[in-house]
Length: 111
Image (cartoon, rainbow, N blue to C red):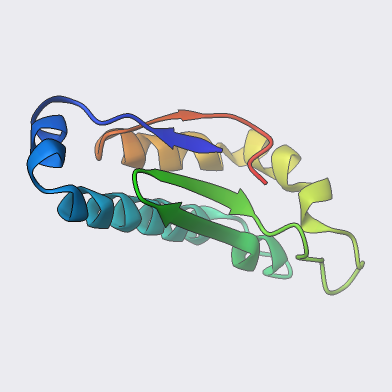
């Protein structure tokens, strides 16, 4: 789960223009998820395709689709996603991108 905390000027804007901040949150989670997928190592492409996100109002989350399966082995992607992340630092890198956009706090499991 990735949580958002609004800071500084964004918090002021949020008080004035909530729909704009909600759009910014949606944009940020979309960008972070696309980035995570783009740096995920590809063998079958299952984990790369399993990155999903959703945002509603002021909250959002980025996660591995629990129904995603490796097409060769049939193993759920969630069974190995954390290990792949730890090896390649995918969430840390996505969080680095997110931090530049005001997103904080990533922890496993992200499903």
